[in-house]
Length: 125
Picture: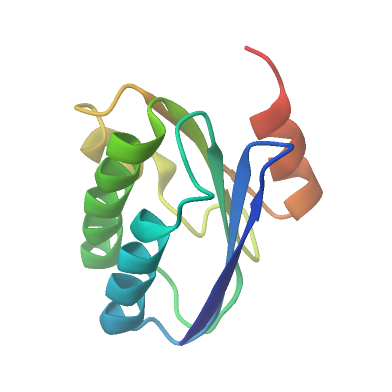
């Protein structure tokens, strides 16, 4: 699995791009690096571009992702989480949201285009 991320200070936006097959160790190392990155702070929104992942999310990987989202919440405060996938429905958003009832500060939506996700996170509620 390969992943990289960009921090856009001006837009207060983190965009992570994932490629290859799902690998828990890569994710763990990503979380550590991200939490230590001084350029990333409260008030950011998060977009996860997963269009180049070769695996589809499982219930276990979604549940593990909830732990990561909670860790991000501690650093970001309330935020929007945009998932960009190959096709809508890749993530079972109803299931994901049911696991996030204890995290009402995080809004989540799924998109197939990165630009659509960016517009959504930048849109004022």
